[in-house]
Image (cartoon, rainbow, N blue to C red):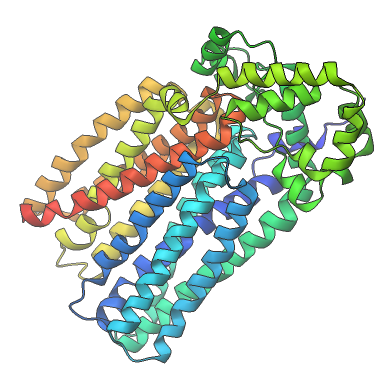
Length: 510
C-alpha cells in the first residue's frame, strides 16, 4: 500500500513548510507599518508638535489605496511575481533606510524624507499584498488563512518588543531611539527573509508544485468541482460543494462557451524560478500531447479581457509555438473562435465585484469599525491611575493577541464560516463597538471592562476578516483568483482609510 503523497501530507499537517512560508510572507507585508507606528513615541520626541502619528497614516494609506486600485484596474499589466518581489525588496530597502535618518539632526527636511520612505512602504504594500493573496487563492484556503494570520503575527511580535523595550530601556529620547531602531532592524530582516523564501524556498516545495499541477489538470479537464478545498478533508456538503452554485458558474452557464475558459495556468512559482521547460519531462509531455491546449490558453487569456499571462507560452515561446504550428491553419481557426467566445463572456473587475460584493463590503466595514477605535481610543481616550503609561501598551497588546487568535481559528475547517450573508451580518453587528467604547471611555469604565472590549474587538476583527478572505476565491473562476485577491485587499485598504479618517471624529466628541 502506497503512503500519502506530499500534497496529502501537506494538507493534513497543521504547520507544514508551505503554511509557514505563507505565514512569514503575511508577516512581512505588515511588519514595516507596525514598526513605524509602534515607534510613535520616538517620532513625537524627535519631531515635537508635528503630529507625526497622523502624518505617517496620511503618507502610507492613500498611496497604498491608489496602488492597489490601479492593480485591480490593470490587473493583467504586471505579473504577480514581479509585483511581489518588487514589493518585498522595496520594503527591505525602505525600512532599512529609516534608521539612517538619525545621522542628521531633526529638521523639516529629515521629516520629509521619513514621509517619503513611509510612502514607499505604502506603495510596496499595494504591489505585494494583493498579488500574494492571488497566489494563495490557487492553493487550499488554509494558505490564505496563513497569510492573514501572518499579518496578525507581525502585530504580536511588535507588541512584545514594545513591552520588552519599555521595561528595559529608559523613557528618554535615547531609549526611544534604541527601541525604534530595534523595530526597524527586525522589520528589515523579516522582509529580506520573505524575499528569499518567496524567490527560492517556496517554489521548490513539492507540495506547492503538486497543488499547482492539480489546479492545472482540473482546469484543463473542466473539473470545476474538484476544488482544492477537498484536499482539506471536507466532504461533499462543505464549502467545496457549496461553491457549486456560486455566481461564477451561473455566469459561465449563461455565456454557453464552447471552450473550457476558466483556466488559470500561470504557474508563477515554477515559472520565475525553474521555467516550465525545466519541469518534469513526463508532465511536459502530457501537456504537449493535448491538441486543444492552445485553444484553452486563448480562452483563459481572454477570460480576463485578454490580459492573463500564460507561462507555458512565455517560457519557451519559439519551441512551443513551433510544435503547435504544425497542427495547421484549421486548428488555428479553432483557437481564434475559442478566444472570441471567451472574450464575449469576459469577466471584468465589475463582474468579479458583483460575485464578491458581500465579502468585499464586509471586509471594508470590518476595518472601518476597527480603525475607528484602534489604536486611537485605546491609546489616548482611556486612562487608569493604577496602570499609568502601561495601560495603553497592555490594551494594544491584548488587541493584537486577540486579533491573532481570531485569524487563526478559521484554519480549522469546522470553525470556519463560509456563508457570505452571515459574515456580512456579523460585520454589521460590530457597529455596536463604537457606542460601547464611547460610553466606556466617557464613564471611566474599569480596566477589566475596557480590556474585555479590546479582546472582543480584536477577535471579531481577525475571525471575520479571515473567513471573508478565505471564502472569496471560491466565488470566482480560477482565472480570476488573482483579481479577486486584489479586490478583497482593495476593500480592506479602503476600510483602513475610512476608519483612520473616522478616528479623528473622536476628537470632536471630546
